[in-house]
Structures are given as structure tokens and as C-alpha cells.
Length: 118
Image (cartoon, helix red, strand yellow):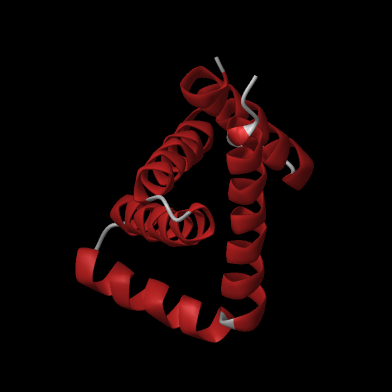
């Protein structure tokens, strides 16, 4: 079986950790100000949240596309990550960090197994 699915899921997980560290530890003040600007321009909490998720998906697209030198894999990774984030935020509100990461890795792995592993 081709292991590309596994590598993509690992890189996407690392990209998610990198995003968290960059946005909440390194660029925290900028990220909060950007969130405030988006909130003021949309006047809607849910639209602000969706824009945040779209920007995060863009980050994952860039990272995964650069690692694999393949924008198709980047688009698929960003799309599945976005869908999982939106779905689990709407349906499964209280998740710890471990559960969050495990859910992402499981669903993203299954998604990429269906595409690249079979």
C-alpha cells in the first residue's frame, strides 16, 4: 500500500501544531488585533469564526503544498481540515486538545487512505 496517505496526515498534523504555535504564541497580539478587525467588519461572530477557519485552511494549503510540491494535495488537505474543524466545532463542542488532534488525524488519515492508499 502506498504510504503517501500517512505522510500527508502527519504533515497536516504538524502544520496544525505549527499554526497553533505561530498564531497563539508568536503572533498572539497580531492575531487578536486581526480578529478584532474582522469582527468589526463583519459584525458577526460566526462570520469571524468562518473567516478564521478559511485563513487557517489557507495556511495548511501553503504548508502542505510546499512540503509535497503538489498544490492538489495542499487543496485536499486544507479542505478536509476545514470540514473537520467546522463539523466538530458545530457538533462536538467540548473537546480537549488530545481528542481534537486524534479526531483530525483519524478522519484525515481515512480521507487520504481513500484517495492515495487503496
